[in-house]
Length: 533
Image 1 (cartoon, one colour):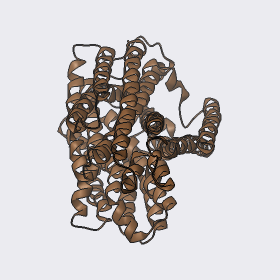
Image 2: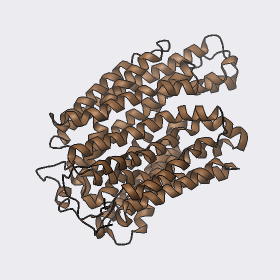
Image 3: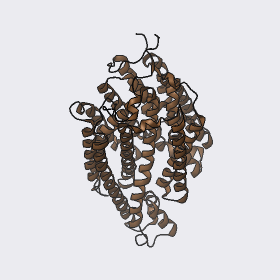
Image 4: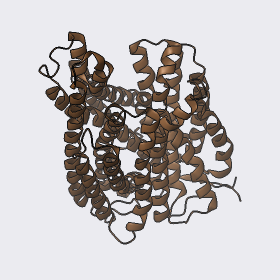
């Protein structure tokens, strides 16, 4: 390695950086796959390990739960010890945890292995995004690189069930976890060759462990509360958890403002580009989370498709996202960022309005068309918003900014499932009432009146036509949730024209220097260890 040098703003990336991007896309793809691939293996896993219902919930939820809790801390660790170094530590841990998950012999062992996967995943997510931000210094190239990174994450989440279905046709349930091993081995071999190291010398102080504990104590109860609401509806416990998390979050913010070297630099939020893009992406993911949840349930419970075929119908998600993330960097060459982002959100609103007309007998095609329009319109905010969040931060804080962005995304997904799921559930329960379920056994009536999945399970005990009514009620709830999502998209489009009016694709966000964070961004205080060619 040569002596450390400062990065050159605007320097265009070459073949090494683009090849490095392909390497960084692999763990990103895998992290998102692990969020969904497990669903296909649950029946076999349950038969083999015999987990209780509570253990089954923790097997599913512990991975995203731990990721959300550790993101902020790991982003800060990467800024201090080096982003490539943290990436390689996380890759090693992810590979080991994948093996432990695949060969787990008890529910407790699998829960522990999945928790370790979550910790490792929390190191990989901010490391990949912050490395991309540092490697691609040219504004247009960085936008394209972030777009490809976002595509990898989206593709992974969607193809997870498809790949899981293929593997489970020939292998045991643990095979879905073994995908992570060769990917992480490849990353460990290629990273030292293709990825430069980046670290912030001024962030060399010790991490404030109290802040670490407070960040986890704030985020975890909030995520848990929203997940419980999405699963079982509103209750005292989940609401109390959310309130407690918000209270601890207030204490966390107060502490960060008083520290010389905080875990999260609160000055970042004084930038309109940073706070505006962060808020908009959170609310956008509220709607995307709801759509994904309803999409999969509609295909399986209303259309009666197998999980594998349902996964194939989700491919339009990938198509819309892929086109959008590649189109956005081209559009900002001619149009303002705010116009491209807001125009895309209005386009998404049209897609959601189409989804309000989906019926129980309309088939999957209309659903796929509407969903494709939605994801196509969301793509500019995914790409440009992420670039604005990371680019608005001082370069030595890009790892922390990336972690904040990822944490916001996790909260948005959890909130979307809870909020839109509750709206749809209220519609369902209002239509599948006692008059519809009259004559059915009490237990079957209670199960059918709770959810469509329950009605499908006890359909043989219900009266003639009740399952059809339940499917229609579920679809009506989906329609209402889609209408709410369309309104959110329209509101976000208006917000984007206001908060992001001076934003630009370089990520500086406020060229006139209106935010305090902008003052912190120059000169960059980042050590880059370039590889000799």
